[in-house]
Amino acid sequence: MEIYKKIIDNIKRNKKYTFMIIPNTTDKIIQFTFSYRSLITVASSSIIALICLITFSSSFFYVNQSLSITKRNLSVLQNENSMQQERINTLVKKSEEVHSKLENLVQLESQVMDLVGLEGDLIMESDQFIVSRSDFRTFVLDENYEDSIDILHELVEDQTTHMKQLIKDVEKQLAHLESIPDRRPANGRITSGFGFRISPINRRREFHNGIDIANKTNTDIYASASGIVTFSGYNGSYGRMIMISHGNGYTTIYAHNSKNLVNVGDRVIKGDVIAKLGSTGRSTGPHVHFEIRKNGKPINPNTMLVN
Image (cartoon, rainbow, N blue to C red; front, side, top):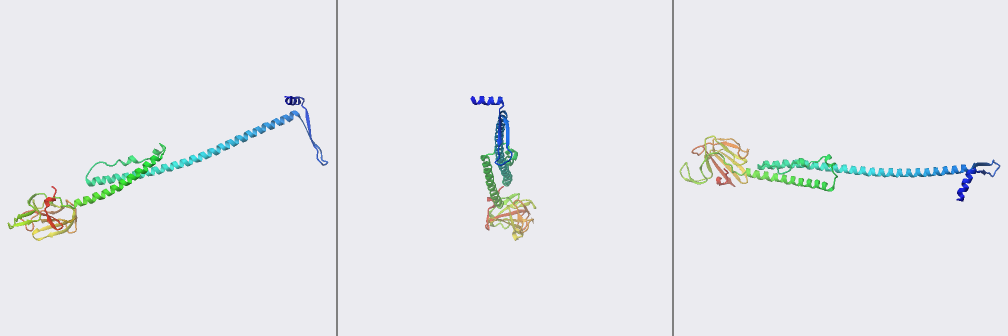
């Protein structure tokens, strides 16, 4: 308390002080005279200025630190956004690939259905699997969704491979079925069957290698199966005749034709019109003599033909 009283007393009396600077040489002595009140004012101003400087420095340091942290956070967010965008682009690309493969799979399915003569949809519409960038931005990406896309991609890839193999197998089987001579070669009535019979020409017992189907002259004669024409011409008692090789050991013969419509080397499809029914060669009336041979040996056509 005494110190404060003394200070206040000095201020009231405005006591003055003199500072002198005396050089070692003969230079002029320098002196400063100021009152106690001035000293207090200068000291107070200095303290206030120091406090302001410290406050400003602290504020500047805090703002600078906050700015640095903000910049770092912004950089992290930019990197995360860039990575998120890359993931979105990757998922969109994968989704588009799945969509494309599904479209291909739907086409393959349609091809299989056409091959086997069925109708219907075994596979979901491919448009259900296409995802746009805007769709991805509506939710937070997670590993489960990315895994689902990858799994779906693999499943579609496997299914596509399976479907392509199925098409090959179906085409192979259909080609095999097309090469089986099971189509009736002409409309009409069977007048003579396969096996032993009394010949209508000489009335003797003989073995008949095929069947005879009677109808009007120039009735269409059809290929019983797909194959290659190996003979087309006149063959003695058979008259105008066509022979077709179908593979798998099968050949067919169509005889007594009034007109042959195919030539040697022609590729014919099951059901193609290959000749016109007639009565050429050793014949008692218009009919087609039809034979099926397996590895060169005649077999009963009735065991093969489908009505």
